[in-house]
Image: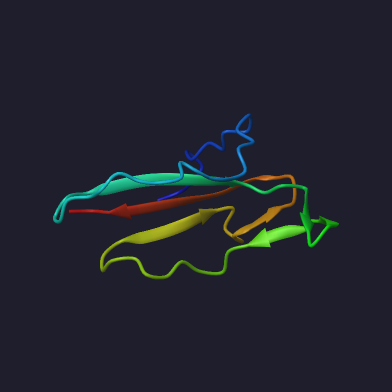
Amino acid sequence: MCNAQCVIDTPNTQVGFTPQASAPVAVGSAISQTTQIYVMPSAYYQGNLVVIDSLHFATVTGLPTGVTYAFNTASGTVAGGGIGVKLSVQKAL
């Protein structure tokens, strides 16, 4: 799971999730994937500049049985202009 060994890739300021997609996983195989997100400090909405205070992930739904996840930081919150909330997804055999 995501722990102190999950290192945030701080130079990566690509907006959104990185990587954007995962490779297909065969049934019965173990997986381990970590994804991070960069949250823009601001964005335009309907022509107005909006400052993004933070983005919060409360839960992840729709994962297959036996697949688990964890956030780093444990709060699941990333400040606007911040990099974090690495989402680690794992399934052991």
